[in-house]
Structure formats: C-alpha cells, structure tokens
Image 1 (spheres, helix red, strand yellow):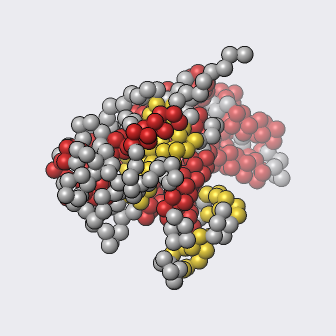
Image 2: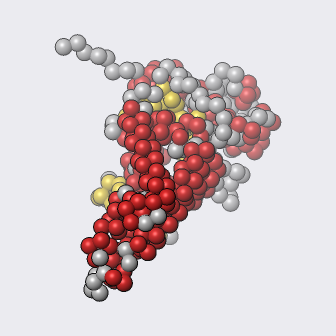
Length: 433
C-alpha cells in the first residue's frame, strides 16, 4: 500500500487524471486526462508558433483578450489540479501505508499541490494584473508602418517640479530602430538647441516659420528646444486641439514636430519618462549595473554646497536614487556629459529587462511603470516591439550626439545634421567575397 500510494501521488503530478483512471472515479479521471492533454497540446502548438512566428504569440499575450483568456485557462487548471490532488489523497489510503511513510507522503503531496495550483493561480493573477497595467500605459489605436524601413521613437525624460510652470523635458533623444534587424541608433538632442525648425505642416511651426524664436523672441524665458514643450502645453494648447484624444498632449506633439525638423525623420511614437518617479522603476528592476568614469555629486548646488554624497568611479550596482542622480547630476560636468550618462543608463536598463526579470518582479515594475511612463504606442504593437527589442538586445547600440564640436547648439547647421543622421542610419554596404 505504501508503494501504491507513492505511485498514485507521482502519477497525479506527472499526468493529472491518470490516478483516478487507475484507482478511482474514472469519469473524473477521463476529465482530468482530457484537460491535461488539451493543455499539453496548446503548449506544444504555442511553442511551435513561437519558434516560427514569435511576434504572433507575443501579440496574443500582450493583448487584453489574450491575457484574460490566459487567466481564465490558468484559473481553470488551478481548480482542476486542486480537485484531482485532493481526490488522489483520498485514494492513496494513508492509514494503510507504512506508519513512517505516512507523514512523508502527505507532506510531499501537499507540496506538489501547492506548487502546481499555486503557480497556476499566480499566473492567472499576473495575467489579469498585466492586462490592467498594459491598458493603462498603452493606447488603443491603429499601428504606424515603418518609414524607410525604420521605427523612430521620441524619448523624453520629463523633469516636473513645484518651481516650474508644467513639465519641461530634461533629456531628449530619438531612438531609430531597423524594423527588420532591430539595430538601434540613439540620436541625442541637446536641450539647448536654438533656432529649431519644425516639420512640414507643424502647428507651432506656422508661428515660427524660420525656426523657434524667429519672431520677436519666443514666449518663454529662452528659445531652446526644451522650452517648446512648455510653450505648447501651457501657453498655446489651442494650436493642438486634438492632441488629448490621441494619447498625447500639445507639448508632446510640438516637441515631436521639432524633433522631426531637427533630424529629418518621421517619428511614429513617443515615450515620456517622468524622472521624478524613475528611481522607483530602477528599484523594481532590482537596481542597475553602471560603470562610472568620474566622481559625481548627489544633490548640492553649483558651488557644491550641501552635497548629500558622491557617486564614486568604478563598477557599481545602483539603486533607483543613485541611478537617477547619475543621469541628472550636472554641477561638476557639462550638459553634454550628462547626455552621455543618460544614454548609458538607457542602454543598461534595456539590457536588464528580460522575460524572467519582468515576470519575477512584475508587480513592482507594473506599479512603478504606470506612474512613470506615458506613450502613444498602441497595445496591439507590443508583440512586434517585444520581438524587435529582443533582437536589439543582441546588437550594439550606436549613438549620434548632436553636441560640440560636431554641432554648435547656439548656431546649428540643420542641413548638416540631417546629413549626419542619414549617414549614421544608412545600411552597411554589402561586400562580395
């Protein structure tokens, strides 16, 4: 009877329903076996499709319908496995097993039940939470096609504060990604670029046809790139009456038009990261590894008074607060040095994201991301971009910095900037052996 009990416990774990078919309620057993074989078939088919067309599977499991369907399936199997395991415990007749084996068999069965049903139940919980999180961050809308084989995404690091009239982008860059290979290029845009041109058809560009600030000075304290957001958002929202319905805002749309004018690229999407909450995202990821090349102050002013601490050179595992100061510190270095650190931090965060990392720390990442990130990327594109991002992680990320001495922010040559970017994004020439 002890051997029988062990066999039934193992069979219930390996092939749920088989224990009932052999020694119990065969109707329940056939139901359990049917459910088990159906799940195995679904997993095999999904695995095969993922190997051939990964974007299809990723799209399904990043959609609201797909996530709720997955949650329902997992909840169903959690209940099914719970019922089958409890029934198996009644079939093994612990009272007739060897006295020394009884507690071991009972404990082993309980652990297996908690492992299987708990995993399925947690998976259902994560799926429903993910559905709510993705719906809160990503919009429902049509997808945009690649232009010249590339997706161009405007990345804004917002720095709101009580002493500012609204949010003003503290860092601006365009991430250009090859739609086939995933090869990415980061184009860093200095926030102090002047005489910024706007793309054709721009609403704010109609006011400044010769570049930002071309008429009687602009309606902000300085005619620089990062002032465009505030001017459109706070002072001229009527120029972009439909921006709110597009998952965007007047400031974002005006900045997008300016970035298009600077780079000569069509920018399909934007991502706005609130730097005030960025540290929470880093903490949710478990920190980030950065190699520091120079000593940087945490806090303080330009005279380095009231400095709260220092970020020392060398390889460091940074928490969210330290990583945010690493990206924002400027008092001992220039804005252009800071732009380089921000690009370094972006790449480090990209490399740290992985399915295993996101799954194990999902609740913290979801809670922080919903407060930190705003974007107009449609939810229906998540599967495609997740698959493309996996390719991007395998390749080096190139960088185009529009900084001195290459570019003079006070008097930039935008035609030359267009040529620099076009050259950097041009496909590598193929060589014939």
